[in-house]
Image (tube, rainbow, N blue to C red; front, side, top):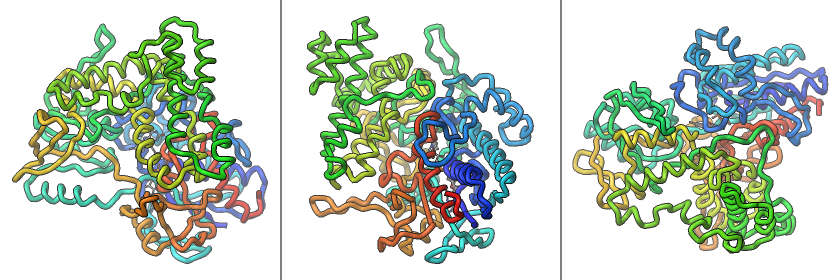
Length: 620
Ligand SMILES: Cc1cc2nc3c(=O)[nH]c(=O)nc-3n(C[C@H](O)[C@H](O)[C@H](O)COP(=O)(O)OP(=O)(O)OC[C@H]3O[C@@H](n4cnc5c(N)ncnc54)[C@H](O)[C@@H]3O)c2cc1C
């Protein structure tokens, strides 16, 4: 049986491993071939080896793995292997030495000793882990007679309505009995605003860097000393911040006070960074969670969700969900604050768990009104202050300094940072609602807009080091953060950038969009997605709202059980599967790599798909 995996990123590699493990386990005599196809090398586009080695991952290295373990609830066999940190400690020195001709291999080899359990590794280093993993798979495949190959090509179309499918690539056509697409984050058609800005930039010889994967953006065109506006304060921003500073020869020096001081090279531009919210993502706390350590819910429990939905029979109001989620954060916040102040916290913890108003309970235990957890303050920390003060620098510096201090206490102990971090441990509970039709359509929209924005702000941020560097760059006068409400317009021949605060407006010739395009099947320029979408083989999820408007998510629809595509006419495409990032908003939180001993979703899905595929070769 011929299986083609489109994409050679982590999901396809993990799926290949699951296919091999299940096949090995059943000692099948049937033939199986697995062909990975990707225009990027093994490891895929996000993890390409030739990107700036200063670009960091946003997970602690001990929290990353490609291997299954006993915690994964799956039908297939567990196949243990080193997590990323263990690999760095054991296999990486030899592997990097034997692949020293690869881009950055020497750099990574020289810096391996810097990596501790809780370091945030380079994205490029993960590529070596991925390739080592693939080499292990090749040896295992060969031992059981599976043909495992990789073809460097772009798949442009998949033709036929049932297997065998014709897989059309820029290097020829292949036949496949089974196909799984794990396409990751595709590039998009520009929005009308982006197209207009790009055209305007062309006409007036301005520099406009479009929204894209950060490793693919050419920031060398931004001249030293000139103003550049970076629109976006998310993860791409931190890559660009590094690209325009350390990468240009500046360096950070630790001070006696434990902060950082930036020494410019003189080649930096003057960076003005902003966004609609005006807030950078919160720093990840210093990691205190070892393998398998997870926050255990008290309010948003599976039992509570089953009770509220009558076992999935009817939806929960978004506000009810949100109140339970906020209660979890309040619980962590108050118990940690109590510990920090040396107040016995056992009685408090018990009272909080039994409470329906945790702020009132906290007051009863002696906390002051100023101590209370206030979600509005998390989302809008400056209230309207940014509109009335011309001292936004002071506000943002204070904000960053507090974030650095709190995240430095660790993701178990810090009052706020630990409260923020808990979401990373309870995503499966939340998925019960979003993937199990646990919300009405209107509430689904609220979740996917309001809650996703909160989740990004508090839980997907960069390592703490990046926030320390950001503050040092502000203090050095290299970086300025603009107040909320950043909008881009044009003057006669330049970009005009405004904010909610009339004291902060900028006229610039350099503009960088610091974000990836949205995950949106309608706007994708991935030729495979375009062709399948245009024929209705791929379709995206839309929801009719109470006011009769339609909420279109752009998320690819698949069968949530076996990941087969569902067409625009509702037909299931036999043995043509897709999973991962393109389904985001139909599924939830598809953009993080597996965490060891976390019963990780990516590992479970891969095992499930592998066993569905192998049912055809009679091994399951
Ligand atoms: C810039 C960036 C940084 C990130 N950092 C982190 C991080 O630090 N930690 C984390 O957990 N997650 C991170 N993520 C999320 C990341 O996408 C996932 O963790 C992970 O890479 C998803 O794996 P995947 O295999 O589904 O997709 P990807 O890794 O994106 O791989 C998909 C592959 O499919 C290929 N492909 C697409 N279309 C075709 C086609 N038509 N033909 C052939 N091949 C095709 C692509 O070239 C790509 O190589 C990051 C994402 C981005 C974009």
